[in-house]
Image 1 (tube, rainbow, N blue to C red):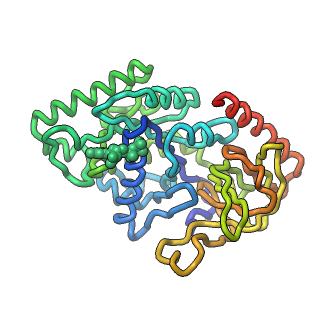
Image 2 (spheres, rainbow, N blue to C red):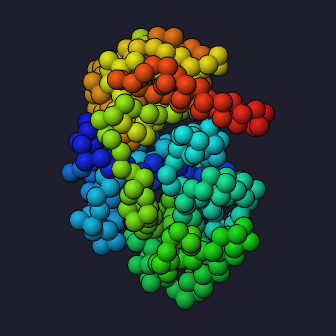
Length: 358
Ligand code: GDP
């Protein structure tokens, strides 16, 4: 179920995870998925193609007293499953970053590393708001684990020595952020997240601080991004190609993150390709089937339409030349030449970027 096809017009903010190799990006995404799967039995997360949706009620359950769901009207958070800045820079929307918010993961033991510096530069250049997840706090010698607890609750239960080390490590990261040109502080001291970066101590292993991380992301999005999230939900869909993939029974397919409007199973779409825009008709819109049903059925389930923000697989003829990072547009009711021109224009940027990266 997409559950997000109402006409309310506020879409889910898209969240990307960046950081140095081995600092815990994958573990963090796994933990967010894991804890929300358990907590979210009522609402439940939904697995999308290439992304994971955590609805507001699940954020509320995981974050406990840190989030009052009645204070929010954004529908939740959509995490892009592929972490790292290659994915971040490839995935663009209308000239900007596809992700609305980012999590920069920094290992508290290693601090800033080359890819941390790179990531921060990319975030600054694309003006993407971000929070820092200061990860692996459980590795501080003497740390007492409080599984899935809010970080301050866990911190209060630690010895003075552990707390002192915790503070030293965290202030080191705050210093490094300052060297990189960003004022930051422990997230609970940040008043204005537009001028200060919130640092959230977490453990992707024990789940400590995960409630805080979800609460901060949700709060940031609600407070500062609500206008950007207002879309014409039923309008012609706009998205970005995550991956071009051969899929048994479907031929070449596109994994797409949809950030605006709706794509329907009978839409004509325009996609960016190596030799310019490709015009084709959707043959099937596919979502992952719930795990329990996969044994007996195909991995995918056909749907009639899907609304932003979401991840979807599009099967259609003539997709062989489509490229990752390229725009996808539903034509619906608009002049085909205008849509082709739109895609062409955006494609020029994608091509330039690919060239720069070698
Ligand atoms: P990535 O390369 O940034 O995606 O990092 P991974 O998620 O693969 O994590 C790298 C290693 O660090 C793995 O062995 C993880 O088990 C470990 N790791 C990740 N997060 C934590 C954490 O919070 N605590 C501890 N103790 N280990 C962690």
